[in-house]
Image (cartoon, rainbow, N blue to C red; front, side, top):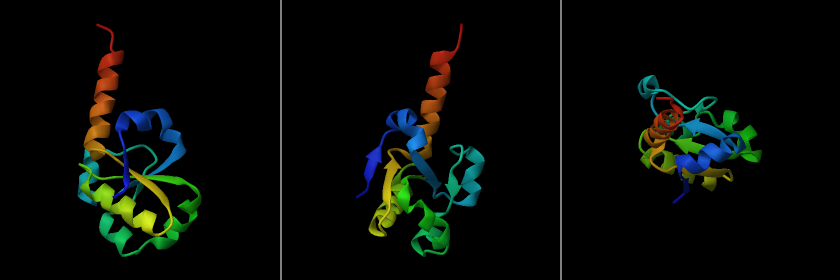
Length: 109
């Protein structure tokens, strides 16, 4: 099982990671993390776009999906291929909830 990182921990270290969004294309309308590479889990596992990933071997990778399950599978697969990958605990939902909380805490009433 891949290491999981909370969205709160990631916010402090966001620029240390290359984000890989493993959701399907129709799920992207809910938003995505700025700068994330979109690569659905099926393509990642089949190594259909493996050439795009080989340049990332020198970087830390953080995978995510909607809720965490596919992101974990993707991080496991990448780690098995020699990458340094973690996944967001709770997926994009947790990331987005953290953004909402951050905005609410910064609002002026």
